[in-house]
Amino acid sequence: MRRKSTTLTEQELEIMKIVWERDSVTVRDVYEALLERRKVAYTTVMTMMKILEQKQYLKKNQADRAYVYRPAQPKRQVIGDMVRDFINRVFNGSAEPLLVHLVEEHDLSPQEMEEIAKIRRKP
Figure 1: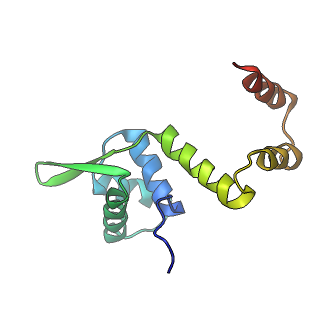
Figure 2: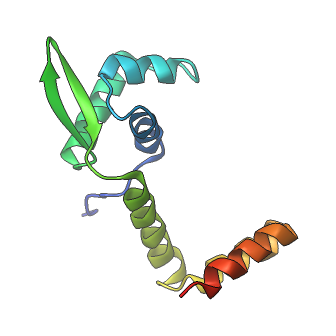
């Protein structure tokens, strides 16, 4: 049996980016933001946001007749957890092969390389 994933799917991450950007949203807010990018059903957005609440990425409060959703975890923490999960699954917990891949395959500029070196030198 497959274990329940706590990491975000592509669609969940898309919703969370909207929530982080706006800090508090209704399902309608997210639905309208997504509609600008692609066709999506209102009920699909509502279901996805319920799932995100169950996974503890969102928390909701009732305001008037609608629920208002806020992020339950900061963006930096969630992204960090996703990167760690990826490194564990793909590179057996070692970040070095990921960094080597990024440097070799993505033609980093000298400025980007210097920025990486500065980060590495920080105590």
